Length: 223
Length: 366
Ligand SMILES: Nc1ncnc2c1ncn2[C@@H]1O[C@H](COP(=O)(O)OP(=O)(O)OP(=O)(O)O)[C@@H](O)[C@H]1O
Ligand SMILES: [Mg+2]
Image 1 (cartoon, rainbow over the protein chains, first blue to last red):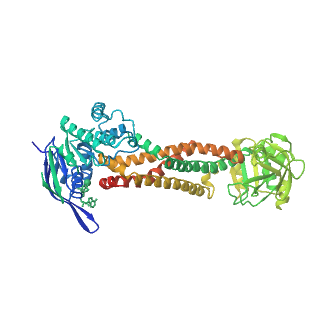
Image 2 (tube, helix red, strand yellow; image 1 turned 45 degrees about the horizontal axis):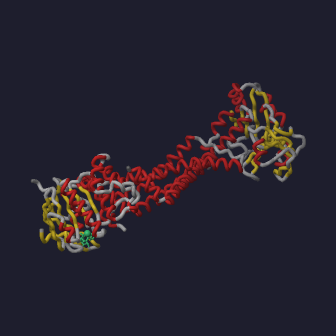
Image 3 (cartoon, helix red, strand yellow; image 1 turned 120 degrees about the vertical axis):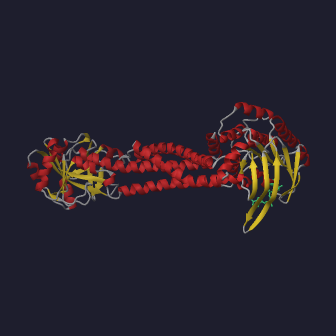
């Protein structure tokens, strides 16, 4: 079967003034649909950069990236935006909810941006599964960190993305809430065969994945 | 959904919203009032000249079509000759004096019998015709505005005049004194600056006008219809320019405030824009969110401006009853369109900047 993510000799350099800072120095990675992959490694090794490239938030410097049949070398900025809109869901360490909107609208706006309109069945299934159906009219400041992150997960998966990319989703949560969020991610992976790539510093968190990737200095050192 | 986002943003920053709306409201009210006042002054004075009832205005060579400006006096005798022309019913000589003492007001020096013959006579609200050389007639609007009664003394050209009567407005000036008195005071004996000519029937206007033109070559002979068509703010030197400058100023204020408001908003909301981008929002989507927010603020501002203009006109009308402000829907629409264009222009650059933000940087923004 065609892998959903296929990355070959991926490099990414950031330009700081006159020097190139290498963030990724040749990453090879293949992920099959339905996998739950944890990415671990020391700070600054390029984990977030890898996730941003896979999600099309930024372009690669060199190498091959092919996701669900989309070859990034052939895609413009606008193409990557469209790709992200239909195939990717992001979850961030800092929740990144829109502060002026209610939880419900934070989730609904993802559907609006995607353009397929509001789907009440999907909405209900997701919010019930994440246990936030009673908090939907609250705005983010009135929610606990764990609740905010669950709303963020709901927003990320509401449009049935091919891949869920989570950058330290438990980094701002206490152990109890972390556990809830991790359970949710695993549940999504099990019930919907949701492909998940999750960055984490927490070995316990990495433990729930069915595959752990170790990174160091812009490379994958073990898989 | 975008409407919800916009509404929540607008409500979330009430002061910014209030300031933006206020700026647009001031812009709109300023355009409506300035234009309304200029048009009102011009058409009001034109209508009053029409109200004299003459069919033809005869004025000296080189006179501007604005009455009272730079006119060399003509001998009153010309008026007597004009009255002898066939198809002429009556001729009223007048000196139109621009009284710069208080506001821009005209005083007509008239010979009451001939003026009555042309105009059909004044309707007196109080008092009666001139009795003494230093008597003055004022119209009801002037009387109300200046709290003038019969018997009140008004100083004009360094002379005290006694108000002898209050007349219905609409016949030329708001104040009238006797022609002979004004001739004395301005040192122009037996002279007049304007002849109001009334034909036996308005249908003869052109015929009579042509006859007068042939006789008084070089004189300024205007059928009243032509005069009315000339009396628009477009034809008044400097007025159009003034209106344009005021409109440009008003639109400039609106443009700058909306620009600043949207510019600070996108700086403040950098992370939110990054979030929208991470959800896959296209550049067009982001631009439309910003432009629609600006449009929304402008729309509220336009409505507030309409109401503000109405209220200000009421207030101004209370203080200066002689100031006619003409508010037409044409100009309201024009003011609204100008405000909208200014706002869209003002928010376009911020919108473009927002659309071009790098999503990773925007998400990392504190
Ligand atoms: N926008 C940028 N401009 C310049 N250098 C950058 C930029 N983003 C990341 N880097 C550099 O790239 C390298 C990898 O960064 P990245 O954020 O991917 O690391 P990370 O593994 O996610 O670290 P952490 O665990 O602390 O989040 C770092 O050396 C970082 O300094
Ligand atoms: Mg990181």
